[in-house]
Length: 341
Image (tube, rainbow, N blue to C red; front, side):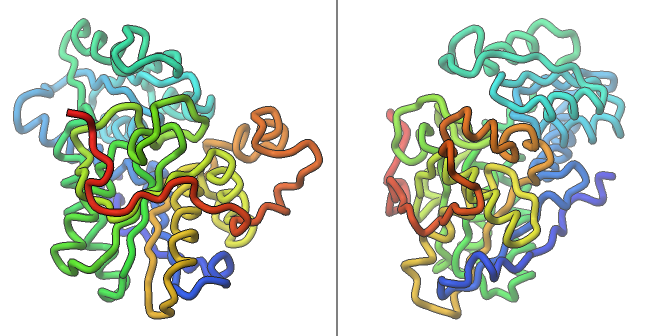
């Protein structure tokens, strides 16, 4: 199973991008065996812990996750014989919890709307479980250098090779920051002019917002992870929950790719930036982190969208047009938004 990770395809998004000059393609990370980009970081983190002695045979992996990292870790743990305990915020879909349990993992659910240092937060609970569980090891994807390194070694080179060096813009939603930081590092080494665009949910700190609750799963943060390089992005686009979700729905209908919310976030940001790039030779590569299979009861439910105020009472999803809204915030310049000292 672990040998099947990576080598994901680039998919043309010509229908969605019909009215912008650049070529836009999506890197389809749902084609990884666990269904997401997080497959790429799980095995390298485990193997680094094995080499250091932090994870011993028969050990227990304890990690806070929005779901996808847990799946990647659970797959590798199944192969290697480790037990897993995953801590999740209650805003994550029930499908994700059920999926982790299907791999044999134990799932602990914590409240979303609490500060990171609150003892009830999924960060704090995972710390406590890691301390109290014999043989436990916490990968800590938010600080583990194997996270961005995996993307420097695999995702970045794959993009460069698959585009024949034609990539001019790389766009990714920001979660732990590992993906965008690792890919940015590689692409800038081979071509310094490549523009790196981060997509950030409204309510996340990366685009300079005050940390507050939002509905989009798996991306954005209320603190600054060590795995995020503040110099990685040339641009950061803030994206609303509505645009993240309805963009994913529009992309699924137009391109036949069942996208998750973080994919909609990245794609909306890419299209907004592409509107200002009048160059048909430009190539935008948009990382699509996972599929929509884990969000059928939420993102792909019109009733749920209406209950959350993301879709009007008489509005049809098919009427959504990404061109009708512009970015609330588009931050320019590397390191323009930084953590407070």
